[in-house]
Length: 107
Ligand code: FES
View 1 (tube, rainbow, N blue to C red):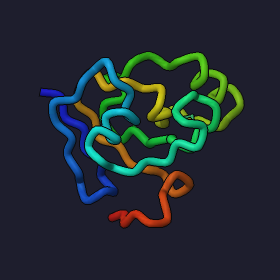
View 2: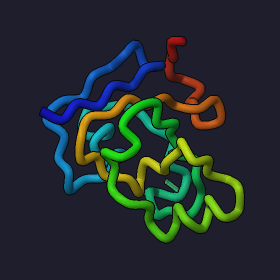
View 3: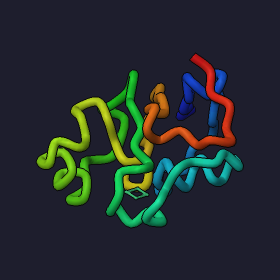
């Protein structure tokens, strides 16, 4: 069973993940607010996430992610939630710059 754990959202677990959906779509299906300034079009990086474990369990980098990685705006352990699909279990964190003011984050 594929499981996503969001560490700094109180270890929130998302189960039964649909591999055809982006991580952004998956979290929205679970009613979790997630920054996505460009509407999930791969043009902003505000949906960025840190992948703590399971980087290889995500779909391949998209051209949008490669562009931002080349610009130095997407680190090796980061993915854009609107671009990455989750194919196997992983642990992620929301980076400081992508936190939403009304949400409560944990360590
Ligand atoms: S929402 Fe803009 S790049 Fe993902």
